[in-house]
Structures are given as structure tokens and as C-alpha cells.
Length: 494
Ligand code: AMP
Ligand code: MG
Image (tube, rainbow, N blue to C red):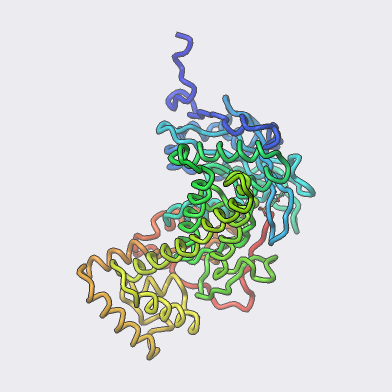
């Protein structure tokens, strides 16, 4: 009867059910180590619905023992904590990186048999910390929580946030700030930079081992393909073309699309300097260090391809025994990206305009609208929202002659399709969020939270949990910030 108590039994314990496949990779890829314990952990926020979907018991997760796990003070049964090694091109420059302030506890196997990385971010120094303190501050960890969960609710593949705890310790930034640890959940943390690390610091066998591991974990369907490494490249290109199109469709600016911040799973990762755009302008940049606008809104698809090209380079030795042939194969696969991205993006924009079928002239209709939005500095989200609810009075486009013409053409376009006006409206409602995490709202919530009032953040999270609801309560959150002469700025490594 000794084995009656199952490891992941949600009734009798928190439900942790770890497997540690990453820890079976060659030692080169990680350092076994525990998080550095902290003084006095306190639970700030727990994602109850995510906990449940992971097979965890939300009530038990609020016990002192469970909070100690989120703080890195206790290692849950079955976990084999480690810091992952990776490299990456940061703003175009290659560097050795790695988890400088994160520890992977292991992979939670859900009751459905899914595998998710459970990682503590802000958990202390590691051999990859370089000059950093290995820690994180409360504001930025809650910011990641809010935005990553908003992205999830918008239907965009992303890492997620299970919990934030404060550490009871201060972190030194420009001033002393309350320290915190975020528990991040991800399909995996394998990055383009993980492959770059393998190529630069490992052997040919290490690259192959990593590629086979990645295929098994994320793309099991291609395992038997004649050239499975080409299939891997094609799949990653597809996922990124899908992901980046989704970003563009909601006005999300990642802000630091370094190759170490691009996942092989196709999930959005690294919520440092990201932010949503208000006014439509492809040149929008929020990150304080992105002086050249490398990661500006309109550049994201091009940077996506640049990063995928770095990924393809790591696979060259696996694609064909002759290098020349391998390069041709890689180039051919990469040449698909632009078409894939564009077709996702146009499909998304058609849906945003309530259009079901395809007409060649749709591209022109879309271009004219976006050009007008740029010229008259229209709010991106609210323009599509106004078209959806047909309340254009308060938009800057409303009284413009060329907009009236465009509107006429759009109506004619809708009349040319078989689907009813009602069906179009429903499609628009599903495709145009009424609310996004607007910067001033996020800042307001963080300011209150850091001062001990979590109600503003909870309300914001609630509003963002169904961005397509179009409820009266959401209206307040559609409002733009007061005009300001100080541009909104975001930061890395906070
Ligand atoms: P990021 O800009 O967040 O993608 O981080 C780039 C690299 O810096 C990664 O290797 C991080 O682990 C590392 N890093 C960021 N902040 C810290 C910190 N406070 N302490 C140690 N390493 C850090
Ligand atoms: Mg990063």
C-alpha cells in the first residue's frame, strides 16, 4: 500500500508533478543549482485558473510551504533545479548569456499529460549572472504578470505567470525597490539563443542532441520526416510568422527581440521593455535603450526574419552533408517567411474589418486605412473598436473627407460578400479587442501595488481577462492617457 499516495495527487498536496527532461541533456546546457533563499516571502498574486489547468491546487498553493517554493526557499519534491545556458545576438551583437536571474525548477506534467517549464525569475545569482544581482523588483514582475496574462487572453501564444511573491529584501536599482520573484510557465525556455550556444560552445553532437530534444518536445509530428531538421526549421518559421502577425494585429511592441528572447515553441517571452502602442505609428519605440529603433513596431517582422536566419545558420550542418546544399535548403525555407507573415497579417486585418473572403483589392483597402491612421495619429485599438461598434464620432478620422470615401468603399466591400452584416459584426468583435493593457493603466496599477494597494491591479486584470467582451465596465479602460510631453519609456533588466 506504500505507493497509494500519488506524487501529483491534487487532493492531498499542492499537485506538483515534476519531470526533468532538460536535466537529461548534456551538462554543457545547464548548471544544477538551487535558487538563493530569501528573507521573508509573501504571496502577492496567484493565478488560480492557470494553477488549476496545471493540475495544481490553488488553495494549497497559498500555504506557507507552497509560498516558500515560489520564493525559492523550498524545493518541491521531484524538482531538479537548474540554470540554463544560452547565448544570443543582443541588438545585433553576439554574447554568451544564460539564466542570470532565473532557475528552472523542472517541468510540470499536467493531468492531461502536457509538459510546462516552471521557472523562478528573480531567484538569485547564477554562473551566468555576469555583473547582475540575480534579482528582480516587484513592479517589473507584476508588469510581466499583467501583460503576459493580457496577451494570453488576447489569444496570443505566450509564457504565462503563475505567481508573484515579494522577498522581504530590497533590490538596488536607481533607488531601493522591493524585491520579488515571478513564477513563469512556458512550453519550454528553448530559444534561438540556446541553439547559438550549442553551436558556439558545444560539439556537432550537442547541436544534434538539442535539435532532437526540441523536436521531441515541441514538434513530435515531424520526428519521422526524411529531413527532420528542415522540418524543424520550417515549423519554427511558421510559428514565428503566426506569432509576430498576432503582435502586429494588436499593436504589441516586444521591445527587445534579441535572439535569446525568441522561443522555438513560438511563445512570446521576455516582458521587459514591451508595451502596447496607442497612436498608430510604425516607428513607435518605447525601450529606453533602443536608440536606433531596431525593434520599432514596424520593424518586428523584419527582425523576426533576421532572428530566424540566425536560427537557420545553427542548423546548417544538420540540413545537408554538403554545406553549399545546406545553405540553399535553409535559404529556401527562410524565403517562405515573408509570404507566411503577410498572409497571416492580411487574414487578421480582413477579420478586423469583418471581411470573410479574399479579394485582391483588400490589400489596398487595408493600406489606405492604415495610412490615414498614421497621418492623422489615430489610436490603433480604438479605431478598430469604433469601426466595430460603429461609433466614429470621437475618432480623429471621423470628419476627414478621405475617410468618408474609405468608409463607403468598406461598406461596399462588406455588401459584396455573402455573409450577413451581423456575421461581419461578430467577426469584428472577436478580432478587435475593446481593451488592451494601456501603458497609463498598467503604470497606475503598479504604482498602487508597490504602495500596498492591489485592488487597482486586480480590477485591471479582471478587465483584461476578456478583452473581446465589449462590456460597459470596459469603457473606462478604452480612454487614452492625458496628453503628455514626456514620452512613455520602458526598461530592460529591471
Ligand atoms: P534580458 O534583457 O531580460 O533578455 O536579459 C539578458 C541577459 O541578462 C540574460 O542573460 C539575463 O539572465 C541577464 N539578466 C538580466 N537582469 C539580470 C540581473 N538582475 N541579474 C543577473 N542577470 C540578469
Ligand atoms: Mg531575456
